[in-house]
Length: 323
Length: 305
Ligand SMILES: Nc1ncnc2c1ncn2[C@@H]1O[C@H](COP(=O)(O)OP(=O)(O)OP(=O)(O)O)[C@@H](O)[C@H]1O
Ligand SMILES: [Mg+2]
Image (tube, rainbow over all chains, first blue to last red; front, side, top):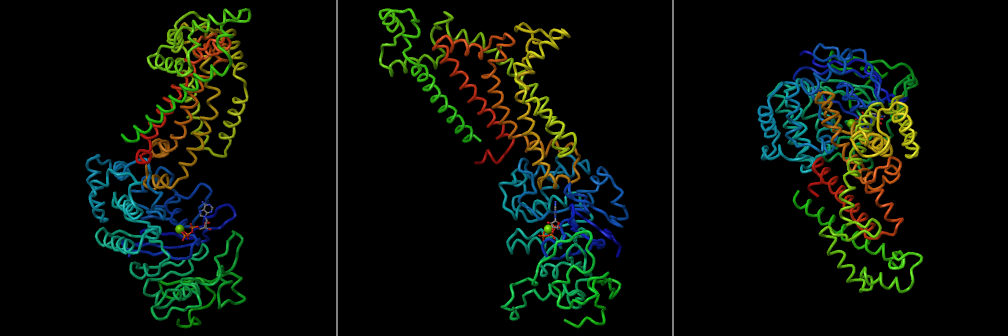
């Protein structure tokens, strides 16, 4: 299992807001790594910072940021653009606005391959058509000539996926690729991503807040809370032996048929994600945690349960009771 | 696209008909034409003769349709003041105005577009602020004053350009600069805001995620979307340049349509006034039409709706 993407101690800030505070994660070759967490916990900015696509007011810093052995921190914009779209691709959370309204689907798809592979127009068009068929778009040839406004949200997202695959990237970062879509399309797209992964040996960093999606697709899961990765584990471990109180809270929120509690809104832990500043010390989850202790305000220990499973909480493994 | 075109043409036609009516009504509302043509010393008998001679005694509708009937074939009658066919007056002077307008628009675009883009790419930084301040100062400067300033420096001191007249292309450079000056700030601001919007948009993030070159991101993906408001305002500005260049035509002694409008209004030469008003309205309409078509070429969404 070789690491394709290694992120250690990632810090992202927007002015005084510390959006990500020392997050670490690793995506192995050919694996799906799911990044889960509540809205606003920093999933998207983590993904964007890996791609080097943070908004202008965002600052990125990290101890390690490596892609297939290449130090991304040392690359300038030019060198980074040789990787982007080529070996490293991303699908965004906003399918409606991510395509350029002024150009046809075909024209937007082929330019990636023309740029990175020096492909001819005809070859790139053939590839685009093949990929559109691959993401189950009917009459792909006709779609190539259409403009984004002529496509539904589901189709646009599939176009984005197909476009991301044009150069057969090694890593695909998919930021909630299915949230904007209806349930049947969601299932199709997820199946599609896992098929593509098997066929192409693609590694996927999949951002979602749907634990059902995690259970179906992930090899490994990282749980984010207020800019930190609070727990990271292989998917089976995480579901059977969640250690961090937040992870346990998240899992409790998954509606189990016949066990849905009526007094609590679906999929929520009481309280809100706090707004973090750089000067914050201690555990960010403390206000919502039922197990909070006085030492939660101090330096928090990262406990290691197994080689592949760690979590960020004062409570040692032997004191965590089975869920 | 065909339907879009047909609808735009129909609107343009309606505008022209409306303007035709107004151009006619305007001169009738200004008072009894026969009296003003006859002049201050005229007797009542003189006025009656003039009324007959110019057909002003006929029913107003008959006069209107008569005028429209001639106007559509380009016959605007005889100018009272210049003693010439109005159509000839216009044909003589239109090229001067058009040349001046084109030179002005050209200079304005060449200056405003790059400055707007540079401003946008340096949003909030020194270059952006400097450019805005200079644009503001430029806008505050009256055009006759700028005209005189240019004449003194480029014309008299340095002797690079002729000061007045229409003989060569050099004659149009100074007035062109002055005309451009008034259009540059608006064009630049729209270019800047359009580029800022575009550069912050999700599709530009996509373009960057695809690893496209900076040139392709700027020129292919951002510029095309930023161009639309600029095209619209450029058409309006061009219209102003053609119709509103009276001051500049006066300062530089360029006898174009603007100057003709001024002369004919002050002399109560109503056939000429009507023709000039109509001509400018048609030019405006055509410019708007051209801008709409150009925008439809740029934005596929416009073609659909
Ligand atoms: N360009 C920006 N400027 C200022 N703050 C930003 C910017 N982008 C993100 N943030 C802030 O950073 C934090 C993390 O945002 P992010 O978009 O990563 O959340 P997320 O985990 O992806 O949430 P969601 O599930 O809603 O997509 C939020 O507090 C957000 O407001
Ligand atoms: Mg997000």
